[in-house]
Image (cartoon, rainbow, N blue to C red; front, side):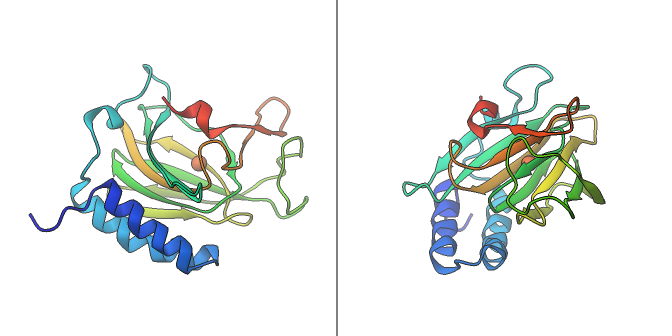
Length: 193
Ligand SMILES: [Fe+2]
Protein backbone atom coordinates (compact mmCIF):
# COMPACT_ATOMS: atom_id res chain seq x y z
CA UNK A 1 0.00 0.00 0.00
CA UNK A 2 2.65 2.51 1.03
CA UNK A 3 2.08 5.97 2.41
CA UNK A 4 -1.26 7.65 1.84
CA UNK A 5 -1.11 10.05 -1.09
CA UNK A 6 -4.51 11.64 -1.47
CA UNK A 7 -5.71 15.07 -2.58
CA UNK A 8 -4.41 16.52 0.70
CA UNK A 9 -0.87 15.23 0.13
CA UNK A 10 -0.99 16.35 -3.51
CA UNK A 11 -2.16 19.81 -2.42
CA UNK A 12 0.67 19.96 0.12
CA UNK A 13 3.22 19.21 -2.62
CA UNK A 14 1.65 21.77 -4.97
CA UNK A 15 1.72 24.40 -2.21
CA UNK A 16 5.44 23.74 -1.71
CA UNK A 17 6.11 24.09 -5.46
CA UNK A 18 4.11 27.33 -5.57
CA UNK A 19 6.12 28.76 -2.68
CA UNK A 20 9.44 27.60 -4.08
CA UNK A 21 9.09 28.49 -7.79
CA UNK A 22 7.82 31.98 -8.65
CA UNK A 23 8.48 31.17 -12.33
CA UNK A 24 5.36 29.51 -13.77
CA UNK A 25 7.26 27.12 -16.06
CA UNK A 26 9.48 25.87 -13.24
CA UNK A 27 6.42 25.60 -11.06
CA UNK A 28 4.41 23.41 -13.45
CA UNK A 29 7.45 21.18 -14.06
CA UNK A 30 7.91 20.79 -10.29
CA UNK A 31 4.22 19.86 -9.87
CA UNK A 32 4.17 17.17 -12.59
CA UNK A 33 5.98 14.41 -10.61
CA UNK A 34 3.63 14.95 -7.64
CA UNK A 35 0.61 14.69 -9.91
CA UNK A 36 2.07 11.55 -11.52
CA UNK A 37 2.48 10.05 -8.06
CA UNK A 38 -1.14 10.86 -7.15
CA UNK A 39 -2.34 9.40 -10.47
CA UNK A 40 -0.89 5.99 -9.59
CA UNK A 41 -3.72 5.39 -7.10
CA UNK A 42 -6.04 8.43 -7.44
CA UNK A 43 -6.73 8.41 -3.72
CA UNK A 44 -9.63 10.62 -2.75
CA UNK A 45 -11.22 10.67 -6.19
CA UNK A 46 -14.81 9.69 -5.38
CA UNK A 47 -17.26 8.07 -7.83
CA UNK A 48 -19.18 11.36 -8.12
CA UNK A 49 -16.00 13.19 -9.16
CA UNK A 50 -15.92 10.95 -12.26
CA UNK A 51 -19.46 11.72 -13.39
CA UNK A 52 -20.91 14.64 -15.34
CA UNK A 53 -23.12 17.01 -13.31
CA UNK A 54 -25.86 16.74 -15.93
CA UNK A 55 -26.38 14.38 -18.82
CA UNK A 56 -24.16 15.39 -21.73
CA UNK A 57 -22.70 18.51 -20.19
CA UNK A 58 -19.01 18.87 -19.43
CA UNK A 59 -18.38 20.12 -15.95
CA UNK A 60 -16.00 20.15 -13.03
CA UNK A 61 -15.98 19.13 -9.38
CA UNK A 62 -14.01 21.14 -6.86
CA UNK A 63 -11.57 18.92 -4.92
CA UNK A 64 -9.42 21.48 -3.12
CA UNK A 65 -8.80 25.21 -2.79
CA UNK A 66 -5.55 26.43 -1.22
CA UNK A 67 -6.24 28.52 1.90
CA UNK A 68 -4.13 31.37 0.45
CA UNK A 69 -6.00 31.30 -2.88
CA UNK A 70 -2.86 30.40 -4.87
CA UNK A 71 -4.30 27.29 -6.57
CA UNK A 72 -7.27 24.95 -6.72
CA UNK A 73 -7.81 21.37 -7.85
CA UNK A 74 -10.82 20.12 -9.83
CA UNK A 75 -11.82 17.00 -11.68
CA UNK A 76 -13.31 17.68 -15.12
CA UNK A 77 -15.70 15.30 -16.87
CA UNK A 78 -16.37 15.41 -20.61
CA UNK A 79 -19.18 13.06 -21.70
CA UNK A 80 -18.49 11.41 -25.09
CA UNK A 81 -18.85 13.87 -27.96
CA UNK A 82 -18.67 17.00 -25.80
CA UNK A 83 -16.10 19.74 -26.21
CA UNK A 84 -14.99 22.67 -24.09
CA UNK A 85 -15.00 25.14 -26.98
CA UNK A 86 -11.84 27.18 -27.57
CA UNK A 87 -10.90 29.01 -24.41
CA UNK A 88 -8.07 30.78 -22.62
CA UNK A 89 -6.56 30.25 -19.19
CA UNK A 90 -4.89 33.37 -17.81
CA UNK A 91 -2.97 31.45 -15.13
CA UNK A 92 -0.73 28.36 -15.04
CA UNK A 93 -2.18 24.88 -14.89
CA UNK A 94 -1.20 21.20 -14.77
CA UNK A 95 -3.65 18.65 -16.19
CA UNK A 96 -3.63 14.86 -15.79
CA UNK A 97 -5.81 12.60 -17.93
CA UNK A 98 -7.43 9.91 -15.75
CA UNK A 99 -9.99 8.13 -17.94
CA UNK A 100 -11.17 8.11 -21.53
CA UNK A 101 -8.94 10.02 -23.88
CA UNK A 102 -8.80 13.76 -24.22
CA UNK A 103 -8.05 15.37 -27.54
CA UNK A 104 -6.49 18.75 -26.96
CA UNK A 105 -6.11 21.35 -29.68
CA UNK A 106 -3.70 24.11 -28.78
CA UNK A 107 -3.88 27.63 -30.20
CA UNK A 108 -1.68 30.67 -30.07
CA UNK A 109 -2.40 34.32 -30.65
CA UNK A 110 0.54 35.78 -32.57
CA UNK A 111 -0.99 39.23 -33.03
CA UNK A 112 -3.18 41.16 -30.69
CA UNK A 113 -2.39 42.33 -27.19
CA UNK A 114 -0.42 39.96 -24.94
CA UNK A 115 -2.67 41.01 -22.13
CA UNK A 116 -5.56 38.69 -23.01
CA UNK A 117 -8.95 40.01 -21.93
CA UNK A 118 -12.68 39.76 -22.57
CA UNK A 119 -13.93 41.77 -25.57
CA UNK A 120 -10.79 41.17 -27.67
CA UNK A 121 -10.84 39.36 -31.02
CA UNK A 122 -9.83 35.70 -30.72
CA UNK A 123 -7.31 35.90 -33.66
CA UNK A 124 -6.11 32.37 -33.08
CA UNK A 125 -3.80 30.08 -34.94
CA UNK A 126 -3.93 26.32 -34.38
CA UNK A 127 -0.52 25.10 -33.18
CA UNK A 128 -1.18 21.41 -32.67
CA UNK A 129 -3.63 18.59 -31.96
CA UNK A 130 -2.68 16.14 -29.23
CA UNK A 131 -4.24 12.86 -28.13
CA UNK A 132 -3.77 12.20 -24.47
CA UNK A 133 -4.46 8.68 -23.22
CA UNK A 134 -5.03 8.08 -19.49
CA UNK A 135 -1.82 8.69 -17.56
CA UNK A 136 -0.83 11.73 -19.67
CA UNK A 137 0.13 14.99 -18.01
CA UNK A 138 0.07 18.33 -19.81
CA UNK A 139 0.17 22.00 -18.80
CA UNK A 140 -1.09 25.52 -19.42
CA UNK A 141 1.39 28.40 -19.50
CA UNK A 142 -0.19 31.67 -20.57
CA UNK A 143 0.05 33.80 -22.55
CA UNK A 144 1.79 31.58 -25.18
CA UNK A 145 0.30 28.28 -24.02
CA UNK A 146 -2.99 29.49 -22.58
CA UNK A 147 -5.45 28.82 -25.43
CA UNK A 148 -6.88 25.37 -25.99
CA UNK A 149 -9.91 23.24 -26.73
CA UNK A 150 -10.52 19.87 -25.09
CA UNK A 151 -12.77 17.22 -26.57
CA UNK A 152 -13.77 13.75 -25.33
CA UNK A 153 -12.26 11.63 -28.07
CA UNK A 154 -13.46 8.20 -26.94
CA UNK A 155 -16.87 6.64 -26.29
CA UNK A 156 -16.61 6.84 -22.50
CA UNK A 157 -16.53 9.88 -20.21
CA UNK A 158 -13.26 11.77 -20.38
CA UNK A 159 -12.10 12.43 -16.82
CA UNK A 160 -9.13 14.63 -15.96
CA UNK A 161 -7.69 16.41 -12.94
CA UNK A 162 -6.72 20.09 -13.22
CA UNK A 163 -4.47 21.97 -10.83
CA UNK A 164 -4.93 25.63 -11.68
CA UNK A 165 -3.52 28.93 -10.43
CA UNK A 166 -5.87 31.11 -8.40
CA UNK A 167 -9.29 29.99 -7.22
CA UNK A 168 -12.49 29.07 -9.07
CA UNK A 169 -13.45 32.72 -8.59
CA UNK A 170 -10.16 34.37 -9.63
CA UNK A 171 -8.63 32.05 -12.29
CA UNK A 172 -8.87 34.16 -15.51
CA UNK A 173 -10.83 32.12 -18.07
CA UNK A 174 -12.22 33.36 -21.41
CA UNK A 175 -14.21 31.56 -24.08
CA UNK A 176 -13.82 32.34 -27.77
CA UNK A 177 -17.44 32.99 -28.69
CA UNK A 178 -18.25 31.20 -31.94
CA UNK A 179 -20.72 33.76 -33.21
CA UNK A 180 -18.69 36.95 -32.62
CA UNK A 181 -15.13 35.45 -32.59
CA UNK A 182 -14.51 37.56 -29.51
CA UNK A 183 -13.39 36.50 -26.06
CA UNK A 184 -16.06 36.46 -23.40
CA UNK A 185 -15.85 35.80 -19.69
CA UNK A 186 -16.07 32.07 -18.89
CA UNK A 187 -15.98 31.92 -15.08
CA UNK A 188 -14.59 28.67 -13.71
CA UNK A 189 -16.97 28.61 -10.76
CA UNK A 190 -19.94 28.49 -13.18
CA UNK A 191 -18.54 25.24 -14.65
CA UNK A 192 -18.44 23.47 -11.31
CA UNK A 193 -21.22 21.15 -10.24
FE1 LIG B 1 -9.16 24.55 -20.32
